[in-house]
Amino acid sequence: MLRFIYAQLVVTLISIPFLIAWGLPLSYVSPISNLIFTPVISLFIILSTLIFICELISIPSTLFTIALTYTADLWNFILNYGSNSWLFGLVCHSQLILWLCGGGTIVLLLLTHHHPLNRKILLFTAYLSICIFYFHHMTPVYNGSTILQHNKSSLTITRTDGITNLIDSGLLTRRTNQHSWAVFTLRPALLQFTGSLSIDTITCPKINKSTLITLATLLDYFHINKIIIAPTKANLRQLKPQLEALTHKCKHSDATLSIIQPQTHNQKNQTTS
Image (cartoon, rainbow, N blue to C red):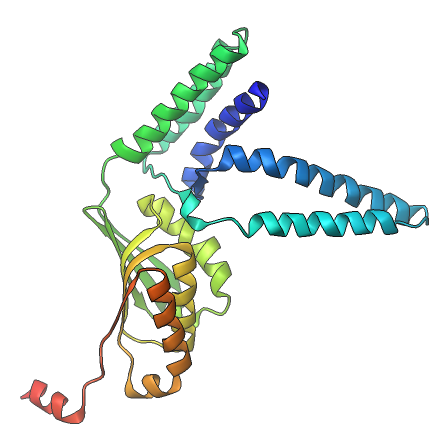
């Protein structure tokens, strides 16, 4: 058990600079999840290998196939208990600091090579705590903006005094695979830029069906405080099911949905005059 803990500490420390650089989240339950998943993954690989060998030499593999099915069901059962609230991000805009973090791990490995296992665990735990504390609390606050762009559409991410706001300029209207985009494009970009999975406000001046589906999907992966949309009268009629679904999702996620009602013809004339 001590060796497992030591291995987790070393792997975590080695991976932290890469996770930060690539905009990938860390998990609060990584040590426990690895303890659970490692046996399941090992069993899955062994059974898959046995089935392959059976097929190769033309002998029945029914029992192995049944066992593999149950293993896959167990895997899915465990994954259902996962939550995005277990994830957190770290940020560092200095490549030098990331290199020093990784280099410190290698130096510590060399210095503690002949130390007792319990002393290694103590030293690596202390070093991991220092690294996480620095990246989480002592990294200089970064204010500014970055833009995700595809063709003529874009999404602007702004960071001011620890508050993150997103302004859509058509990018959300063009999403077709919302889950993939949220996990592999927006989440890494947001973590690289802010180190956080929290969004204060998402503003969408123009919407369509894709926009509403994407917004509902983002609520699964980010903590969003407020969503502002400005539908047209045609949007309100055509996108009623998607609007209702987004409203329900916002209530379930404790997010505020603000719908800017379209102006009537008389209101437009009054505004102009």
